[in-house]
Image (cartoon, rainbow, N blue to C red; front, side, top):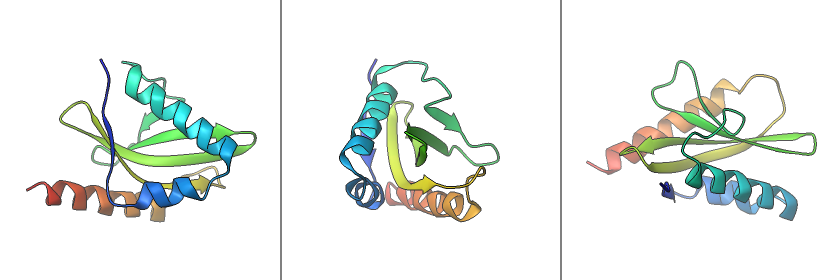
Length: 111
């Protein structure tokens, strides 16, 4: 069982390219887990309560926390949207709204 990961538009790529080498390695590790492990631990992938199918992939490196929004499509496909460096306890509502907008554009583009 392996999931396929795709990137919708350039939001994730832009975020990824701005990170340093060690953060990129950690992101790759977490994405590999999401692809390969059937039941991904909540530490790495969590459904966001109150959203329609929006998940956040969680990456921690040293004392920094990064979040990458995604969703599932057709059960297996993980579609990566925007990512950001988390600086507060709560995920900023503006980031959730941005991810929701991108997710809606993704599903609309498939019709």
